[in-house]
Length: 213
Image 1 (tube, rainbow, N blue to C red):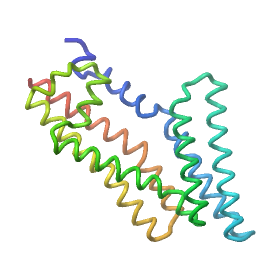
Image 2 (image 1 turned 135 degrees about the vertical axis):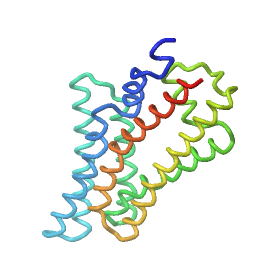
Image 3 (image 1 turned 90 degrees about the vertical axis):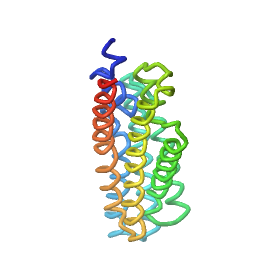
Image 4 (image 1 turned 30 degrees about the horizontal axis):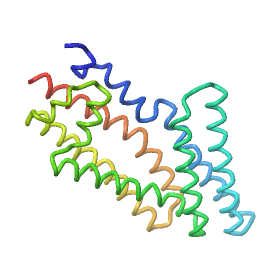
């Protein structure tokens, strides 16, 4: 059996790249950091509304810069464009609410949606981690007919639902406390770093389970 089919190390880089690559942290996190910093600094010199406007403009400018840099370097635009669309939605929520914390509300909703989807898929016997793993690793779709593998992927899927739930809970609490600075920190720390840890644990768990079959 080849390394790819057996879930050997080749699968992990592929999965990491599918989740955004090494540039994912900067592309997704920098606009949020800039938004919070500009908003905090601007509030010392202007009204709350003016500070929020400055923060939104700055965040969008950074998002555009990320896309342009990818273009110049001839890198894939999929993650950058999707990230910019997410940024546009976040800015819309901030503008609509008139509060800096509104910038982070879409992310909370997204984590709730993902967590629910992963949990439901595990409960109905169609674990999403299995489908994603099979698509990336080249695993035969007959894994669905193997009760043991289906159970392994179900457990991994529940684990991912807990990852999304932890993000939603922590950021939801900080949102209720109106702490945009801590929201930005939580988004960074519980974003890419937590994803890397979850990917590593998932790959190790699945690899070990498949080695026993």
